[in-house]
Image (cartoon, rainbow, N blue to C red; front, side, top):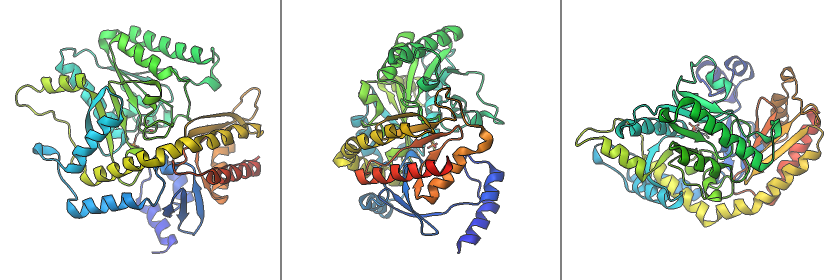
Length: 448
Ligand code: PLP
């Protein structure tokens, strides 16, 4: 089938996630055809440097043969095994044990999902169940962070705090609340690391006080606020929030869907600050995008609450046909082996080229802020560097930049508020970063 027919069929039938439907009908789809290492090739034969790892997920890079082989071998042996009715499969059991080994010590039990949104949704359902099971049925309020993203499930989308995910969807729900984002670049308060940490802790305490601690179930946060504009809180922020939740007696849930699996330098962002959450959600880098899979992990205390709450013979009614899918599990085991065998170390080694490249972009007249942790970073473009004024949305600058970058052979995420997000794969070399920043500079100069 030629490109034109595919574009027409796409227009007629395929609903894409998170786009303006009319704009997409006008523009048409861009078809990606193959990938190798950090590079993608589209159906027109254009070769593009992927500086976003697909959707912050292909942490290994494309074309990892051993991952493909692991998936194929499992598909031939046993493509599906239910987790219902006490059945299971070897890769899923091994993966659960592996995840317990590589995540913070507090996390001892794993529930598999198909991605991040259902991992967050499962976490919410387990938390509600936990409090009902342990005689605390009033604890039903959830707190998250402005600009946070926790997926687009019916409940998780209310913890997400981005307007597009709320508009027309009747969320947030009445039991979902937010505290301000630790957005140093745009804060009018004390922007020292201590100031930012103190502000978040004070905001969480005051929100819990306002709601009444007996009514608050949990606090959800991302270690780096990803889809909200790659906002990087200072070191110590996550630990301070954990301590605050522990003191208050509410569950502390860390959403590592983006930050997990080497993205911020350590295997998990929690590791850098010795954070031990009560629950953790993950997806994306777990399988590096080679198959869909996510997970929610929980402490023994939460698990025991759920188990004891079941009573002698009633099941916990939460499950998916594709929980613990053996092919995804086999793929995840191989992907984790690659991280441990050298990709994590490579990501750590090349991150300095990434950081240096981003910081050098501060000399560009359009760039107001540059921020990163590990291989997760952003540039914030402003109309005026002194006032930090944003560009008029009517200029559609982000869109123009994304289009120009594509023509220059580069893909990254241009958020609508003129934040450019980057999440290069852990397999990047210094030369890949040289190419990235040369193409990026050329692109910004062209749209200036
Ligand atoms: N949580 C975070 C922090 C995310 O960034 C995302 C997706 O980007 C999700 C949850 C939802 O994951 P998924 O898109 O796999 O449903």
